[in-house]
Image 1: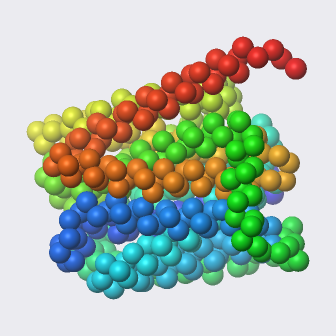
Image 2: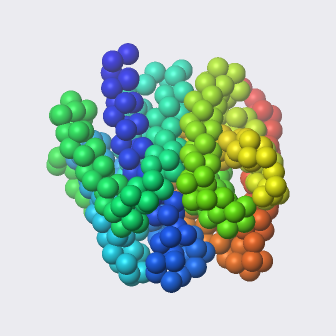
Length: 399
């Protein structure tokens, strides 16, 4: 048990820190946009730049983890996130774009690194649950961003809030150092780093149909997830007239729904349904939630609004652990981090395209309701693809 839970605790903390780093600016988007004299629609472009960096880093992560170790790569990611947050504190669109790219470079290798550690230390029958618990670090980071950042904004201003978040990431990198020697014992310092290795994760994914299917699903799901987390505060503030603190707390509750969902769905997938049927059900939950969110009204009881957003978070954020555990299962032996990096390239590409398209649709119709309604279309297509794949798998004779 010790060999399983120590890596889980370390990776959970690191995941929460980098996830918080990613969301600090979107949580403050109305204030930052006003300070810079730009539209909040640019939030989608910020997210796209972050994940452009994350794609690059995730493709390089497998080789980097093998050479330097998962903890060292994670520490480097935390430092890059801290540097990116500090750059975002400079009131310039160009500097913020550079900071966003650095945050992406720091965020990208964290999940492949943690998958490498957990795949080595987790029994096969417990993988969905353990991976799901680790992936609660993503919504926990959102909880921190939604609950703490608005208050920091009031105390220190938007630039001060960014610098405090940068300091937290640096402290986390320092805190991980005592565990580096034990958890990075499998590293191979003689392994070469070459640009040609960047294509290896994608080739691995495309050569295995099961991994290709998972990657395609993650492309759609990640678009929905980041459109929820990246625009929810702005939507509640501008459309439903919520204050920034109240909207931030609503974001935190949706993230808590994601925390509960990731653990619950991982447990259900391990015990009863299996990964693919679980993903099918979650796609259905996301379809219902996007449409319900689009129909929210300022006159609705706050409890009803929050309840819808918690369900939205449970589905749109809760899918990730089940997906990553299944990627680790389907990966060839010893290649969990490479397969994870390859599938995450598709995941992050969905994030690069999704939020800007969401913002563009919302801007075109002058309503974020239109953006949330449009999310249902690719989700329906994804759900149908999962159903067809499940039927084909069920029809194949046992070997």
